[in-house]
Image (cartoon, rainbow, N blue to C red; front, side, top):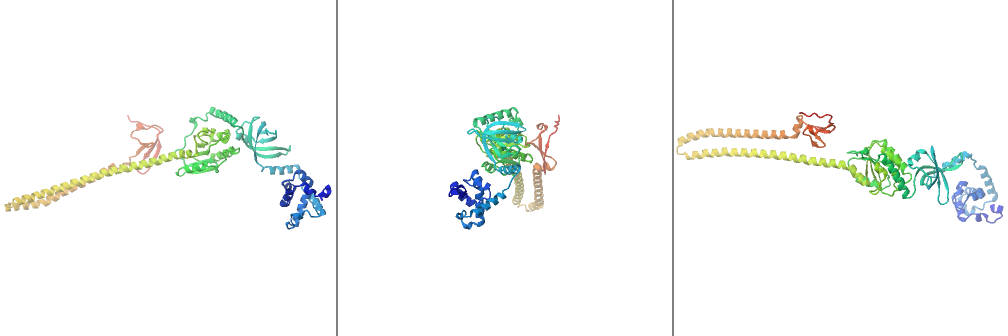
Length: 503
């Protein structure tokens, strides 16, 4: 039909390539927007031939695919003309406002990162600026909310090269295309980045934010630990593989740590932990160039971290890198593995002290047990000696009896007398010795029990220490010291308010 109108044979195949025709036959577009998406179909072709092509496609679709693509163009001109007229009647008409709403709804999903040179910048409540392409002077109008601009931590100047992230939008009142920016960062060479780094470093240093006296000590025995890093990086595994098994509760917040959107992610993560009770916040990432670490040199992020209620430890970059966030953090080390070891340190020292105290207690107990055993053995030796002495005396009496056997009568009387008295004497003497021995054993038991430290505690005494050292005099104590007072069944930690020394 179109060939007849233009007086050209096979006009359709001259106007469009075979691949374009194949694309139409395969995708079966339903409207001009879908037709524009086919390679080889420009705006002019759609305007000139779009209605006829859509009519052919619709007739072909109604006839079924079983006819084959080669049959699509064998339809009568009258039938196509009827479809074209019908389609033109059905074409939807939009108001300007609704059409622009449709465009903006589609453009919202077209987020992108754009690099260019700032050609103008005007902060009137919110930021209006333009980006220029240095190659062909192409210009992109941009808009950014003031809150997002403050978060970016940049002071825009003409000629500055930056990267912005956002999406395009048509401003309905002027019909002007604007790029709605939600994040930005410097995209210049190392020299420009170093200059911006040094300027911010000097500013923060003058405010005293790097001073050691403003930095907080890490908690001695942290349990709840907040962790900010990327779940896709290797550093999270380095940290988790080196953190000890001391019952930590690790609360993880995923965040980008590089790129235009990293600052927004990191600030959101910091806000998340600001509302939660954690003992310590950890921020880690691997090493990189000055450009890749830009997010950690952002003033807005740095001030958010300073305002946190809990101490912050950073493991960002390596020894040669020095992000500004690491300089203001309460503790900064070179790698995530070292961060884990820093957290473990106090727990490992406590575990070592428990093991040392256990060994010392065992040694003291063994020493007292050995002393008691020696005293018992000594008592048994004394008892044996006295028994042998009594036995010797009996033998002496018997020997004397043998010598005086000739004086039988005298001897018998003496022997009878001796024999009458000897058993009683021996028994009485042994009984006395046994009683003495039992008395000594009882005294030794009392001495052992008396020297038992737990007995002293049961009697109402207590043992006072300062930082693990025993206090023997009030002169060792100062106001404000924390005392550990050990009783028989408990321990009390108290603070000294006043020290009174007896004169």
